[in-house]
Image (tube, rainbow, N blue to C red; front, side):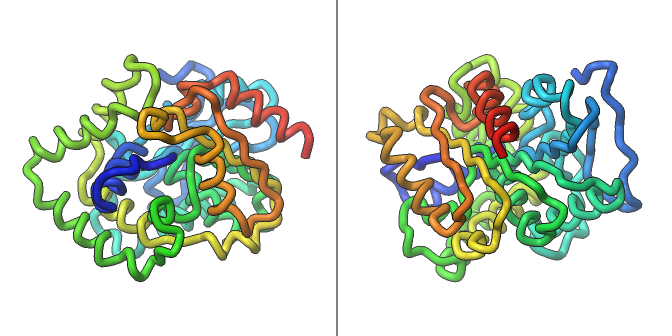
Length: 303
């Protein structure tokens, strides 16, 4: 997801990260390990596809995708704690991304899932990369939906996690100190460019309002200070990256220029295939769902 060209980095990151944010009768709620904070719904049978939504987002990010694949695959629709109405972990002391990586890994091991495909959107894409690095023998394929190894590198490729931390903490303090009315107003404003279909806006705003603010800021700080650009050189699994650019066409972005940002960020991941949607905004599974399904289907069939 390409940022606007104007405005300070703090504002840009808030715009990027805040915005990354009815089951059928055939679904089943999956039993989770003791103390797990994840909510997981399974549908279908076959090889495992684990869908991980992004910041402040719910399972419905991937429901249309799951509906398409469930005839041949077993879909595991995850939802992270503190987001979109899920209870938060108020005692969480460690980095949010590391904690979620380890919870998802515990779920995979508990249910003895093997040769899985991780499909992660936004923050979920970052988690997918982290899982592949942590447990390479369990992960067979990666599908990354509009996510990058290091978001602050969008504006400045020379930025580092260490240099970014003071700004991330400044952003955390600013957001935590806002009144609830101002916080919700800013979040609603930032949602405007997340989908090319206005019908999705009320749900995105509701997800934001029902997400725990402390969890949201914890996750944002973790994203802003996690740089995987070098680490991903260790990932050997075939990786499909689906990117979006159309929301920022008015700011001078082009498909080629945005693809260039993706290629630079994923430069050290050798077995990667980067494809750009022509029309979709950040929530690609809603905005360009048929294209997403076709890309994933062809990719899985060809590997």
